[in-house]
Image (cartoon, rainbow, N blue to C red):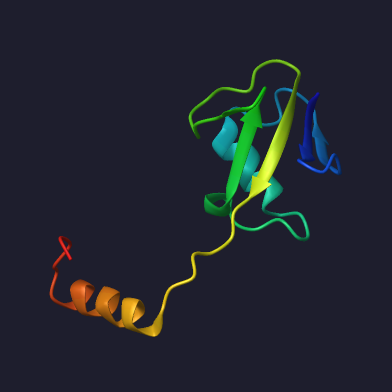
Amino acid sequence: MLRVTKLSGEEVASIAVGEVRDARSLKQRLSQLPGVPARFRQRLLLDGSGLEDADELDSPMDLKLVLLPFADVSGRQAEDFVEAAVWDSAAE
């Protein structure tokens, strides 16, 4: 089984090995659960180290799920971002 818990110890899911092939597909599966955001706001840890999306999950393991918040930006930063996108100015 792939056992996924939050850092608090709360169990999020237990999924049979073979139902998902890699960290990315596990994140996609987890995002279907209530209270779990989209995969880009999830980080999976194995023994304290972060997993990459392509890492295979082919054996039983205990994983920790970290949910990432959205970044706080000021109104000015948001405007600058939109302006850079409009003018295709990635360097800004």
